[in-house]
Image (cartoon, rainbow, N blue to C red; front, side, top):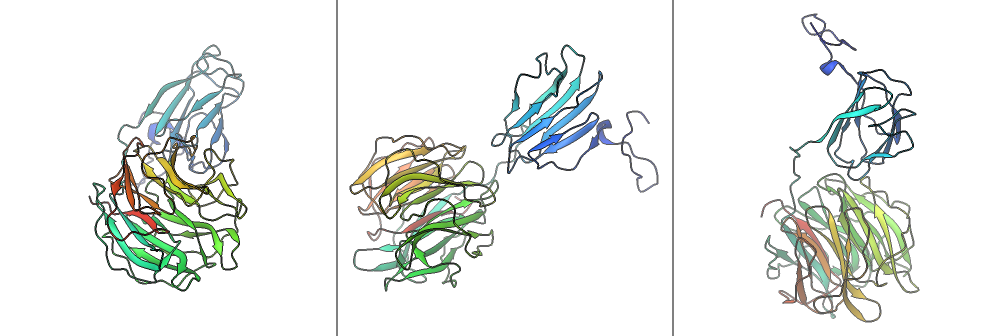
Length: 424
């Protein structure tokens, strides 16, 4: 047997087995810092945080360390290599060495004091599996001006809105919706036909069929927002913010697991507000933005990590407003907030990068309106529809909003929308 023998174990035959590659592979690293050693391999998981990796303070020619992007998240949370007093590719330790491309693997080999550590390879795995994408959408519930509704309208993978489907469940408005389980959806909370806040939910299967009411969990409220989050297929959802029964704003949130079960209230984070919008972005992340604080319109935002934890306020960009909508588009995790009101209705939009950075206003396209809804469809596109004026605007995969299409179905506002189905 040839090769370096490290941390060997007995095979079923009782013969000592050679460690793969002559390296001792370590448990997955999830911490924000780790000190590594030669002749070892490390799986670095930056799903929840970036990681600083400290190399050995002394090394000999031929020493080898391998680092692998365990969850393909270095593109979101990078690793930083601290060469710990030694050179790295000929540069001294005063230089910052970052690797920020998803799917990289680094094979570091030490040569000498002049060059120090050298990546003999720093490749990206070209065989990345692609997560399935959302193909269809559904708009549901709402208000006509004379009463709350429970009807819905499906959207096919080409962005065509279908005629009304008779509603299931309690008629209500000022509700919200989000995808869960990858290819299903959930509508939740709102204001019922009697003008009372509710916390009931209705699941949507991967054929777009809305199920009967599920008894509500959490504080009853309306003018709420919801988005998908969690992992490559964003298989969980979060409802947050809104107006409670006494008329005051809240920042409570409720998580939804990948089976559609709503959790109890989580203590709120961020400024209390209602009439805001939310969307997924990046890889399994979400963001809530804009809204009414009770004393005026705001443009602040709050990010949500892949574990559903809501972050503190980020000072807003763009026109302060509410009663707007948001949806993902593109293949790299971008999103778009659009329309709404600040006293007057508007049609401005604001793009969201795959890092959750909201851009300044883009001159609006289509009829200015508020209390509309938006969803992802067709894998990489989005749709805004309904609202105070019954129009539809499609968004292509680079975030360009198209001109108005006359609305289909019953004209209504204060409704919810979400994507569903992996099948076109």
